[in-house]
Each structure stands twice: as C-alpha cells, then as structure tokens.
Amino acid sequence: MREALLQVQTEMMYAGMIGAMKLPDPVLAAAISRFRKIAVALAGRDDEEFMMRLAELEEYFGDRSPLSGALRKMILDARPSQMKSMIRGYLVNYIYEL
Amino acid sequence: MKQRKLRAALAGVGDISMMHQPGYVDNPDCELYAICDPKKELLEMRAREWGVEKTYLSYEDLLADPEVDIVEVLTPHELHADMVAAAARAGKHVSVQKPMCNTIAEADYMIAAARESGVMFKVFENFVFYPPYVKAREMVAGGEIGEPLSVRFKLGTCMFGARYYPLSVELWHLLEVEKGMGQAIFDDGYHKLSQAVDLIGGIDVVRGWVDRSFAYADMPGLLLWRYKDSDCLGSFDLAISPNLYNKSRYFSADERIDITGTRGSICISRCSAQLMDTPALVLVKDGKRIMFDDIRADWQDGFSDSTRHFVKCVKDGGDPLLTGERGKQIVQFAYACILAGKTGSEIRPDDVDDAAVEEMKKKPGRKYW
Image (cartoon, rainbow over all chains, first blue to last red; front, side, top):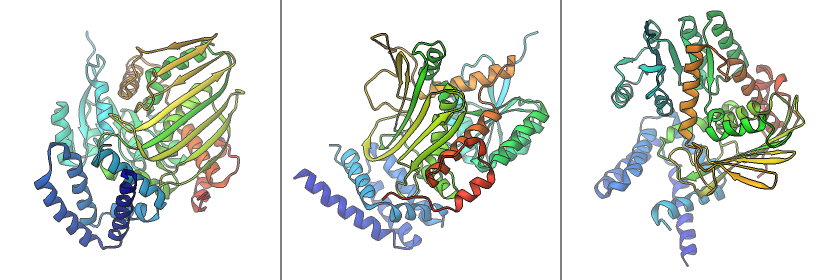
C-alpha cells in the first residue's frame, strides 16, 4: 500500500512539475515567492536547506537568469522514468524519511 | 636570517575555495595572505570566516601586490588561460583548479606563459593526493601486487545525501555538456583520468559508450583504454542513480578504484563519500587480506596535501607532479573519452586537437534510450 501511495504521489508531482515548466518565468517566480512566504511561516530549524533552495528557484525564475532555461530543459528533456525516480527518492529520503 | 613564510592568494572564492583554504591552516611554509573575487559580499564573508585581511575586488590589483608569491586560480574554466598567463607574467607561481582549460590552444598558452616567466605552474587536482591512493601507488610501484594487469575506476553519482550545494553549481556543470565538455567526464571524471595516468602512464587509445541522464549529465558511460608503455588495461564506469541516498560531507559519489596485478589486488574506496562499509584501502596478496583501517581518508585530506605539496615545491624546488603538461595530457584524454563515447570510434588522446574537438561538438551524439 505504501509503495502504491508513493507511486501516486510521484506521478502527481511529476505532472505538476511538467505543467509548471510551461508557465512563464515571472508567473513561476511569483508562485514560488508566495509559496516561500507560507513556508517561512511553517519552517522548522531543520528546513534551512529547503528554504535556501526555494530562494534560489525564486531568483532563477525572477531575474531572467539563463539558469531558468537550463532548469526547464533539464526537467522537460529528461527521461520521465529518471525524473520520477528522483521525485520518489526525494519523498522517501526527505519528506517521509522511510 | 629566518625566511618569511610564502604568501598565497585565492583568486575566486566560490564553493571550491572552501576546500582549498584548509591547506593553509597551520601551514609552516605558507599563509593565506589575500583573497580576490568581484562579488563583494561573498569576498567579505570569506575574509571574516578565514581571518584574511587583504581582499581584492580586482584581479589586476591582486597581481600588482608584490607581497603575493602564489596565486591559486579558482574560477570558471573559460577564465583560466588569461588569468594564469597574467599571474605568471606578474612573477607569481600559479596553481589553477582542474580542468585547466577548454581548448588545447589555451593549455599551450598557459604552459608557455609559465615557462617564459620562470614560475612554477600546477594544475590543481586532489585525488592523486588522496592518502589511500598515495599508499596504493607506493604499493604498486613497490611490486606488492606484481605487474598491474587492469585498473578500474568507478563513479556512481547518487542524487541524495550530499551537503548543500547551490543549484547553480550543478546547472553550470550540466550546461558544459552543451559546449562539448561535461560534468561527469570532463570535470569530475578529470580526477579519475588524472589518477589513471598518474598510476600507470600515458594513454595509447580509448574506446567507449556514453549516454545522457537528465538531458545534460554525460552518464551512464563505460570507457576503456590501453596504455602506451604497459600491458595494463584501464576502464572507467560512470552511472547516476536518481533514487540512491549516500550520506556525505561533500559530494554523494560512490568512488572506487580496483587495481589487479599478477599476484595481488588493491581496492581503494570512499574519496568524497562512503557507500560501502569497507576500509578505504584493502590489499589482497599471498592469500591474505590486509585492511588499512587507520589511514587518513577524508576527501579534504587530498586537497590539503595537494596544496602543501605545491608550497613545498615552490619553497624548496621539485616536481609539482601535476604540471601544465600533465594537465594538457588529461584534457586530451578527457576529450578522447568524450569523442570515443560520441562516435564509437577508437581515439588516441595524442591526436586530439582543437579541430577534432570542434568537429565533435557538431555531432549529435549517440542515444541508447
């Protein structure tokens, strides 16, 4: 059951990620900024790296950095199986710490 | 009269500089005297962290400081050639972070500038100073395993478990693939190729297969080579595991070297992380397995020992081991690996020139998926 739930969550996150990559930079930057504000309010002491990562993403999509293009290409051109494997790893190792 | 300590400066204080600075801590021969970076906030932060008083936003100003004896260039590859040449012409001994450059012409330019200026020039690399490897090299040279028959390098990149690195570091590395280089073979792989040459000697010919992961990363791959002056064969296998956790204070890579000889075998592991619960160095010979449990095996040790070695060479004279010529040899070897992986042909590193590299960049590469 746990594996099935992980798989469903992975598929949903992958679909969300691919969908988000089709949005323009300013829209993504604004969305990440809003999410970061909520996350800041909820973050614990162990969440420092996650908050730093969000700040980076906001920067890359916010200032038309060439890195936003690289990030999009990496996500959109990668094999779906590799991306899903990475998402599963993130869930297992950092969210649920299974 | 007591000679004053040598004075070193770091040009570029990005992420990798944090591995270079410890080589100057408690160093009896050299002090970290100055740091230079155009990013003011970063420069001031590093100066505070390391207790360095002299800071320069301008590289020209740094080179004009007569107190600086050694410059370590720790900037992106494409800036290396001009920065190294300028430092050499200013009379500074120079160490440049690997890989030394993107083109063979740039390598020749740096080597010539250092030679004409009479300064010592090193292409910095830490894996050949990793203590378990140094011990293994001594054992091979001392005949502990007889004649080397094969040497196998493994790089298993794990996506989780490394310390925090800005995403820009990874993306910058990955973008190098589009310019014909690549994170796995040209950059990180440089360490393994450097050890391959250091251990056995020059490379005759390379064959290989290289795939792509995450659109950019030049892995998985398998590279095979023959040496010029040895019957030993070499191989390097690279893979990326998107769902593998490997805890590390540095990069979460599973790195191993197996050296097989006519009467023994050596296994070196850990380097930047530790996936397997085995000693960093194991020797098997004459029916016995010898574990080197107490050898220094922190990845940082290789950086510090590499720095200290160069300082000793500047102070007392001697061979910096990782010379400009060696650096050029490794760049040619790396390009030969990429060319072989892309074309499926046998490539001789000695034949690799800028024209061959430019031609290779136009090829789309093979895909296996």
